[in-house]
Length: 154
Image 1 (tube, rainbow, N blue to C red):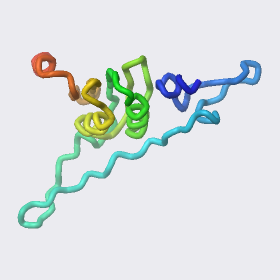
Image 2: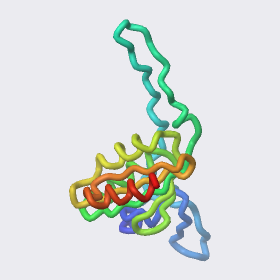
Image 3: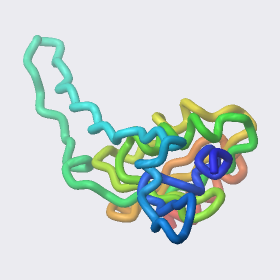
Image 4: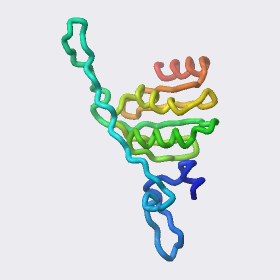
């Protein structure tokens, strides 16, 4: 079970049991599972103009939560760190070995920056904002970078 937790196959709301006759319960109630509570996105700071006046930035992008599709090839030993970071950003659900859904109220570039902190040069990351039809990625290489831009922009 510990290996499944480390791999992200078991998350806080996964149902587990030590004996089927005793019934199932959320993994977060297990002694082996140490849940990481999601934290709110950091509050944006308004930039200061050269004259000392505070201007209002455009935070419309992060006003409503979005569902992000996250694909990560983690070939290093950073899988657990990545999993912890994704859980801190909002409500996350693992769909497969390399795919997650994340509901969060952050701009896509912030999501990419937070998640890429745990990655090495061996790892790759792609993020899709389903609400705003935007993409962000990390460490995919120049050729793929150009092909994604051509495909997405049109």
